[in-house]
Length: 316
Image (tube, rainbow, N blue to C red; front, side):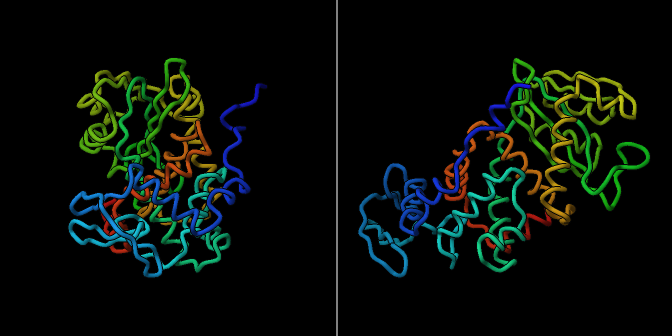
């Protein structure tokens, strides 16, 4: 069997990570370069003239309007009391580990309390989610209905209080290989829910391939074409070649979640954990680059205090 080049890519070793981001000064410089690649710019007046002072952390003061800020103000890192080295190590662990990393494992690796590790993880998960919400799948797209919280029993499409429904979708390239994916929680498998999903997740030129579940017809609200296959139930249904990749990714997702998270409140947090899996998959072609890419996402995302994270939970 030929070696999978993506799976066996070098990535960023711990030694290389520590060489590049091992000190507070290195992390500060990397954060500055990621946030202001063209040089410092005032977030209030767009001025570029400044002077620097220190107040525990380096501060920039705009010479035009007098606004003063540090490198973390207005980012996911705002108001943190932790060293940047802790945040950067969390970014490294969440992007370079094979099956992601739990908050409990972050607690052990970072040397912080569980509450702190949980907050770091969910801020970074929400950052991933906001990035993935911008993605629109195009070309040939396989979709399927799925649930978190155990196997669905009974008639398909009828939810249960203990299970969280989500749409699994994967875009394949011209060679029939998987390219991008989206895993999106929905209110249920209804025509209205799938209509909203298609608006948010599909490009107008997408060619959607689905099974015979009636609500999938709603994708025509957005997608150019809908290819419907009535497959029935049982093991033979999941082996249909038309749905090879979406069934493969669902199997990988189940393995990843069960191997990393022994339990989590999927009713509240499904959107973030599914986005984490998608975020990592969609950037798998350059594993080492995921560290600076997530850093860039974090410094261009508005602050995410606990109150904002709780509001986000309530909406999903």
